Length: 203
Image (cartoon, rainbow, N blue to C red):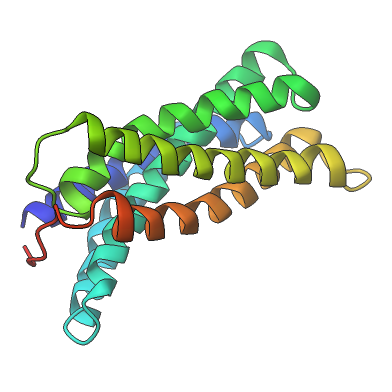
């Protein structure tokens, strides 16, 4: 039950955080929007985890990957929330400011990621140590470079298609970076950072 409670909390937070990027690309944020978003994500997250728990009876990695995906979704919305807040404040959505904003937003999301992944996704019962944190920071830096690099390539090199809102394209670029960083992070955290300090039991 603990897993379903925690993933429900993640769904609730995602439901709230989705408003920032939505508002920045012109979506009308109404009370109905909040109700649908918050209730929808809060209900969907435990349902998705339940399905993955069923699948994990055959392939154990599904449950762990499901938890990582839930945390990754929250981190994505933290990332996009901070990014869009900075864009809203400055009205700057490209160039060097975008690179700086994307770096800040990704590092905030990464801090959130460390604690969720260490103690929930990978089930570590070991205390935080300098050695483990340095490993995490090293591989997260790799993920940061991949994330920011891909996002910046899409936004600043490829550029928005003619007629597309640059703020919408900034978010598309950010999501491309998130996906690339997501795969890097899962593999490096599972097989290197938290290897040997995890608890592989279903809850």
